[in-house]
Amino acid sequence: MPPPRTRGTALRHRLAELRGPDVPAKALDARALAALAANPGCKRRAILDGAGVNKAVLADALGSPSAFGQSQFAFMRGNAFEARVKADGGAELLRLVHEKLDPGAEPPTRARVPELAAIGPEGRAARTALALREASEAAAWTLLDHPMLALDVAGSPAFLEPDAVVVHPDGSWTVVEIKSFPMLDGSADPAKVGAAARQSAVYVLALEEVAARLEPAPRVRHRVLLVCPKDFSNLPTASAVDVRRQRAVTGRQLARLTRIEDIADTLPEGICFAPDRPPAELTAAVESVPAAYAPECLAACELAFHCRDRSRTSGAVTTLGRSLRAELGDLTTVDEVLSAARGESGDPDDPAVAALRRAAALRAEALRDAAERRGEVPGSAPELRLVEPLESVTGGGAR
Image: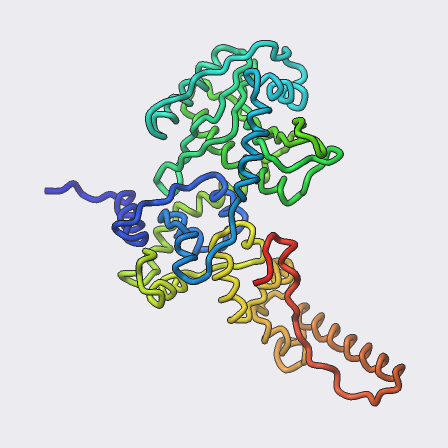
C-alpha cells in the first residue's frame, strides 16, 4: 500500500499537474519573490510562481512575448563591478560595511572568507548554515561570498543566493546587495533602490530562518548595505537601507502563498499551464485565474503584456495605475467612470462620483469659455475620455 498523501504532498502534486506532467519546475528566486510582494493581490502570479511555471515561455505560447529581462551588456557590467568590490578578499566591501553599518566595531583588517562549495543547492545551503554558525561563534569579521539560503515557500524550499552576507564581530549578520546602477551625489534612482530593498528583504527573511535554528539565535540586521558605482566611475560606494517595511510586506505575502491551495481549489478540473497546449486552451487556463494588472507589472512580470491587453479590453481602471484605481472606489471600469462623470449613473453621495461630476462640470465650463473667446458658437463639450498615461515611466514601452 502506498503511504497516505499528506496535505503538503497533495499540494505539490496538484501544482505539478497545473505546471504539466513533463514540465520541470522553475525555481523561485529573490527577484520573483520580491515582485510577488510588490503585487500581493495578483492570484495569477501567485499560482503560476507557486507551481513553478516559466512565465516567459508561457507568454511566448500566448502570443505576448515578454520584453522583461536584463541585457547581456548590463549583466557583464554588473559581474565586473561585483568582482571589483570583492577583490582582495572583500577588503573594500568590508570597509564599506564597517563605515556605514558598524563604525564602533574593530576595523576589518583581516577577515575570514570560508569556502561554501558543496554538491547541489541543498548541500550549499547546509554548508552556508554551518559557516554562519561558525562565524558567529568566532566573533570576527567574516565574508560569505554568494552563500546559498533556503526559504520555505508554500511548503517547498526556494533556494536564494545573495551577493554576500557579512558576519560582524558581535555575531550579527548583514545582507549585502551589489548593483550596477550608479549613485549620483549619494543618491540613486528611487525605483531601483526600492526593487533592491524588496529583494534584500527576501534574503533577510531567509537568514532569519537560519538564525532561528541556532542557539542562541544571532541577530539579523534589518539595515542592509547597497553597494553601487560612485557617480560615473567604477569605484564602489554604499548606502545603508532599512528594509523593515519591505520585510514585513514580503513576510505577509509569503504567508498568503501558503494558501495557494485555496486558489488551486477554485480552478476548473483538468486545467494545465503547459506551453504545448493549444493556444485557445492555454489562454482559457490563464484567464481562469484572476490577475491584478498595473503599469508597474511591465518592469517586473513576464506576463505583463498579456495581462495589459486583457485589462485594456475589459476597460479596467487599474490599467491607468494603482493610485487612480484607489481614488475611484467602487468604480472599477472606464465606462463606469465616464457614466458617473456624465451623471448617468452612480450615487451622488459617493465622494468619487461627486468629484467626477464636479470635474466634468469644470471641464465643460472651461471649454465653453475657450470657445467664446475664439468667437466660436458654443456647443456640446467634446466627449469625456480617459487617456492612459505613458507607461515608459514605469519601465514599459509602447506596443
